[in-house]
Image (cartoon, rainbow, N blue to C red; front, top):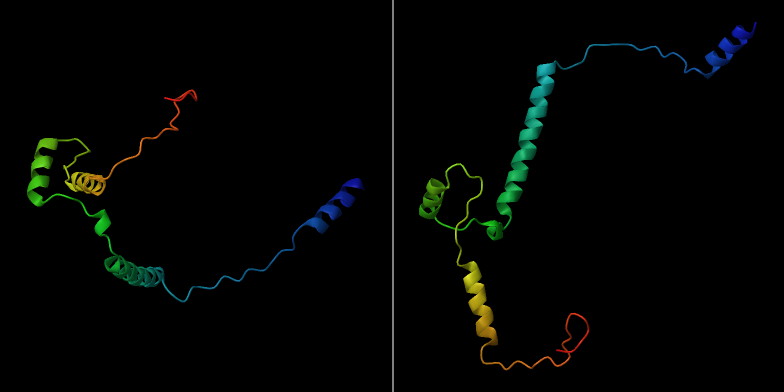
Length: 118
């Protein structure tokens, strides 16, 4: 008697059974894949066009072909290579030219590591 009451309580809590009607798809698998490939190609072309319109000059790799050929020949199997750039030297000379001829005030309130005046 107790088991029948328990079974009825469990049946009341269970999700009702749904009838599932399986029908064949309209498209074949290859047609579906071809359609997805076309959609991807269109999206990819749009993304490429956006990238082409962007200004990427700040990411430009410095050095010409001769410099890169020389570095790659000497690098062997190493993963990191570098080419010397004149950019830092150019920036450093600009900063020096800006401050050249200007007098700097001595900093009287400069304190040392432990709060004492220097």
